[in-house]
Image (cartoon, rainbow, N blue to C red; front, top):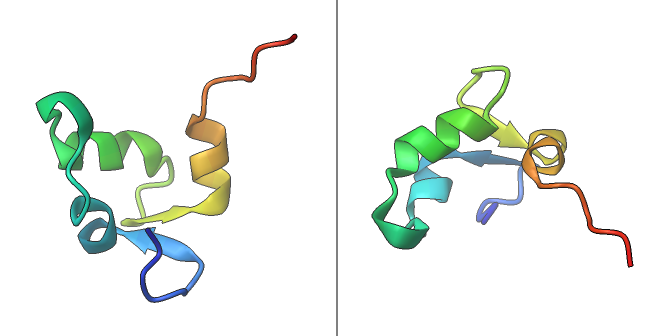
Length: 55
């Protein structure tokens, strides 16, 4: 998703991929962008992922 390889995902990069189930891309982006700086860092992606299930 980081098409320009700058280490963060901008809204333009994020919205280029259609969200699942007709969800709003801006809403999802804002939920992941926890510091509100308009970019999603690797840490924010990791923080947003659900916990892994134990086997």
